[in-house]
Length: 461
Image 1: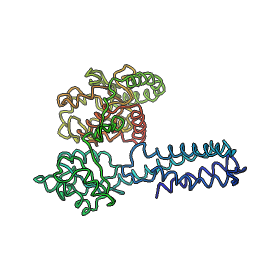
Image 2 (image 1 turned 45 degrees about the vertical axis):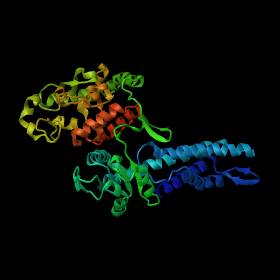
Image 3 (image 1 turned 90 degrees about the vertical axis):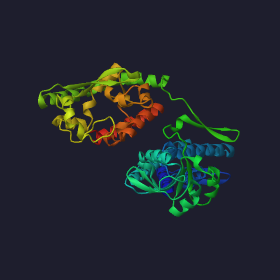
Image 4 (image 1 turned 120 degrees about the horizontal axis):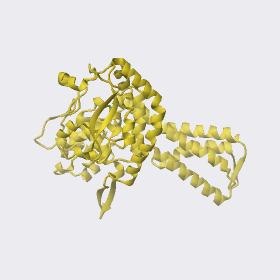
């Protein structure tokens, strides 16, 4: 109903905009029936809602994710304009071009903006624990844990796991991060378990453990129950653009395209980063000079901090930052290493005693990373990419982690905008690998947009 309300408001706004532009004057005759343009604009309201309903714009979509939320108004708007143009041509009705040019673009934009606002509101509600979708998961324990871990990284999806169906002999209770999930049956018991738990959706994460049931039989059994069926293939870290469903003699196969590691588009983005870094450095030069003076006056130590990092194809380079810690911070690390608040290879301490007064401010707003523009100009880094790793961290890398070296490290990336020190090490590695495997220029733009929000919010520590 919220989407219907959004579209009604959008149609009213478009009608008011048309009245403001055209004054509502004039009329049109269609099959001997005359309408004023003011009445025609008002008729757009029920017509627009009907078009959205017929095109599936109001179907329940629990995920609230991706551009498909905005596809319906755009496609519906194009189809409606085309239909009106055809009817106008066939009936020889002298339809005003200005009517089409001001009403329908306004209508589509207003609907898209309304959906965006509604999505942001729903995201916020779900992050606070509201509007949750009760989910039953079916599969073996390792598969369920991987699947739920992926869901937990995206809290805006709003799934709340209420139970699990696992093969006989496994645990009675699953420990999933910070909560316990009861086991309420075997995979073949999924239908009864879902109804008993009041689940709104069932997710099958490993169908191999069905003995009498199958995914098709489960779908039949859930018909008209109001419970959605989700089937999760073991490709949760592969983005949608790389996946295409190929029906082969009635059997759907997932075709996963090779990642664009050394593509021409990626190399073009690298060159563009270098070109844009030069004017950006010149614009930010006064700010950087002020920071340099403050760092020097704070304790008299060096302005810059240089550290060896590993980049594209494991080539080492000296990464530059404004010094935000005491000059002998590396030597003092051994004294506080046991206080590490992060797991894995990273050392993070929220109240690190080595951070200087100026350093605490510039780290909060990520201003200490501005000198990395020089690394971008030299070609060692780009604006968006995986985190540049330390040489000592490579000792813990397996074959999977080394794939991050297939691209250049970035000043920002998925890991940074996801929460930095609050993200567990395994998830941080997985986010970087996801970026490498599923890179696209649009993904870079989205990360840059989120980076600006993070920096302005002062959550850079």
